[in-house]
Length: 434
Image (cartoon, rainbow, N blue to C red; front, side):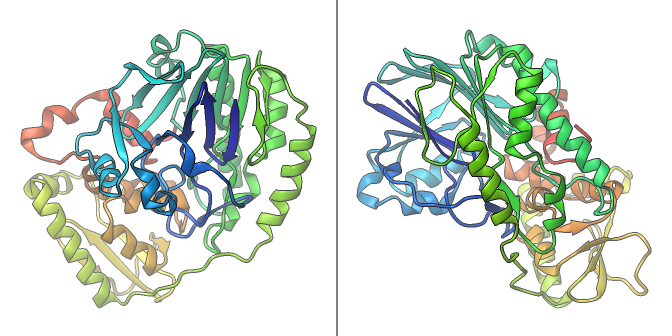
C-alpha cells in the first residue's frame, strides 16, 4: 500500500512495517520563499516505523515536522539517512530522541515486513532510495540531478527491477533574470525530459510525478511561478513520451501500487488548488539590516571560514582569479556593498553598473549560514544575470563545501579532486548549467 502525503512525501506499508519519505507538510521553506500548493493535516504520520530523508533541504528534511512528533513516540521511529562525513543530520535526530540507522551507499538492507531498501548518493548531497517489497519495487529519485545517461548508469546496477518511479516534474531554483522567461521555459522542458530519460533507463510500469507540489511564495520570487510545469503537463508528457503509465495522486490518497488509476479526479483537484495557492498573499521580508550589522555578520562568517579551512588557500583562489568579489545592491536599503575574502564587506560609492539586487535579509542569511548561498539560489530571492549568479556561487562555494562536512585544506585536497563530485556539486548549486 502506498499513501501519498504531500510534495515529496509518501508512506509505503508492507506486512506491518511502514516507511515515510521526506515529510514536509506545513509552513514555508527556503527562508520563507516556498509554500505547499495544498496544506492540510495528515493523521498517523507519527505512527510509522521508519522515516527516510533524501537530503537536508527543508522541503525534504523538515525540522518542524520532526519536532511535532510527540517525544514519547520518537524512540519507536528509526530515521534512515545516508552516511555523511560529518554525521550532522543523524546526530541532530539522535538528540531529538529518534533511533537512527545510517545507510551505506548502494547496500541493500532489510528493514522488516519483507521490505528492503537501498540508498545511493548522488555526489554533493542528494540521495535516491530503492524500496523493495514482496509486491513491487519503488525507485524514489525525488529531485536528484539526473541529467544524463551516465548519471543514471551509476544507479542502474543497484536497481534490478523498477515497478514504480517517483520523480520530480518541475523546476526548483532560480534560472536567469526576471525578464528571461525563455530560460525558465527551457528549464521546465528539461525537467520533463529527465523524466523520460529515467523511464528509458529504469523501465518502470508506473511513474508518479511528485516533489514539485510547491510554489514560489514570496513577493521577490513570485514571477518564477509563470513557467512551472503543472501536474497536467507531467501526466500528458508521460503519456506521450514514456512506456509507463502516469499515476497522479493527491494528499492522503492511497494507491495499491499495482493497478492503473483514473487520473481525472486528481487532475481536477490540482487544477483547482494551483490557482488558489498562487492567489494567496505573498510572503515578505521581515527584517532589514544596516551596513554595520551586515559588517558584523560578514566578519563572523570569515572567522567561521578561518576556523574550518586553510584561509590562505581560500584567498589564493581569489588572487588567482578563480573566484571574484561580488557586488550586491540592497533593495531595501538603497545602498551597494561588495564582499570578498580578502577585503571583507565594503560600502561602494558610487554603485557599480553590474550588481546582484538582493534584500539585506537574504544577504545576512548567506553570511549567517553555511547553506545560505544554496538557499538563495533555490529560493530565487535575488535578481541579476547568470554571470552574476555564478560569481556569487563561486565566491561562497567554500561555505557550501563546509555544509557537506568537508573543508578547503591541503590535507583534504585529494578528497576534493574527484571530477564527478566537483561537476555534480557545481550542477547542484547552480554554478554550471544542467
